[in-house]
Each structure stands twice: as C-alpha cells, then as structure tokens.
Image 1 (cartoon, rainbow, N blue to C red):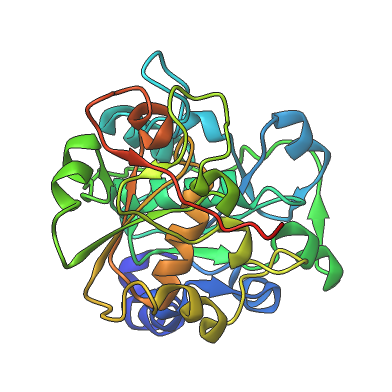
Image 2: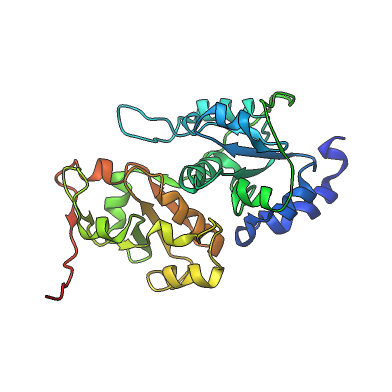
Length: 294
C-alpha cells in the first residue's frame, strides 16, 4: 500500500514517537509497529557475521563504518554527504521513512553515533531508539532471525544535512558565547587530566563534564528524564542553550547527544574531539585540580 494513500494514518502512528521528547521506544511499541509503512529497522553490528547470527526480526544490517569511517584525519569521522546518501538508499530509506535503530549487547556508544549520523543527514525527528536494544527485545519474547536481509527496495533518500556536526573553529568561537555550553562526555578522570596517550591531557578550556556512561542504567536503558535532567540542568538551565558535545573521537559523546535530545536540548557534536584538539597547541586545554585527602 502506498504512503500517499494513508497520510493521516501514518501521521497518527508516528507523531508521538517522532517528537524530540519521545524518541525512545519500547520493544512492545516496536512489535506493534514494525510492519507499519515506511518504518525501517536498523541493527548496528560491528561485523556482518554477528548480524547474520542473530538480529531483530525485520531489521537491516548497519555497519558503523558506512556512516562514520576512520580516515587519515581521524577516527570515526562523519561520512561525506553524497556517500552517506548512497548508504541510506542502499538500506531502503526514503525521505519519509521512520527509522528505528537498535544495538546489541552493550554497544550503546557506536549505535548512538549512528543515530546522530541519521539525524545529521536529514532525518532529525524521524529517528527512534529501541531502548534496551536487542537484549530487551529478546527478554520480552519477541522474535529474532538469522541470515542476511535483502528483500527490500532501494530507497530514494535525498540528504538534507543539518548543522549538528561542527569543527574546531566552531568550538573555539563558542567558548566565549554565553548561550552555548561545551561538554566533555568522557569519564571524569580523563576530563580532570589523567593521561590517555594524547599529546595533551585534560579537557577543552571551560568545558563541563557529563560522563556518557551515567546516561544509561545497568541494563543499558536510558535513565528517566528526571535523572538525565539532573546532569543537564545545572550546566544548561535554559533549554534554548546549545550544547556542543565531544569525547575522544566523537563516539561516546553521541550517547550524551541522545540524552540531550530526549530532554529537548539543541545538541551538536564536535567530531574531531580531543583526538584533534589535543594535537593543536594553540587550542586551549586545562586540567582539573582534584583535592585529595592524605
């Protein structure tokens, strides 16, 4: 059945979940809607063999390197727009598609980066996150499948990139702007200055710290909005404040990006992150003085 025949029905089905406040969906929700027109389910695996061994029934395989490849300029860089467009078309995605992304086991960070990349390429407001991932799907008794999935049509997606991925010059300019907050998503010890093997340790001068691992609980579900707000509100009490995330290479920061999206903040990612910033001596870095009791 064609999308043009059911515009009101599809709008009714997706409007609540597509809102920035409701981008997390449950296995029960997905099981109800997985056969809806224009819904595409993407399961992120680091290897195709793992996907073929077990995937959510109806999911398509998304390899992280297709949208965030390693390059001579750094690790996990944003793919260029034209190639990103080709990847999404190959996955059967169109501009009207609603996309569910799901992770396996504990692979929240790399999957969150794929969520961000889908939004970056123009699907913001149309990308949803299966909270709890494949493990929660299975725990609820819903079906999994084996093998590869090929029975879907190539999409006609046309990229409309959004300015949510920024460079070092943008970050440097925003350091002195009161309505923009720079946030380091790494563990606090790395934010403070514990050596990691980069040319300079510490964090971008003036940056705040929201550790990515504290956004989810032990079962890899995102914490409640109230719990997430306890991290964001102290540093950005106004939800109109732009938050620019970074980490080591732009992967773990994507989890905090997603948490901020759940809360309704305007979020961006500095893709070069400390891998780049620490190597450019004129860019300001600082460490945190940690009081230690004798």
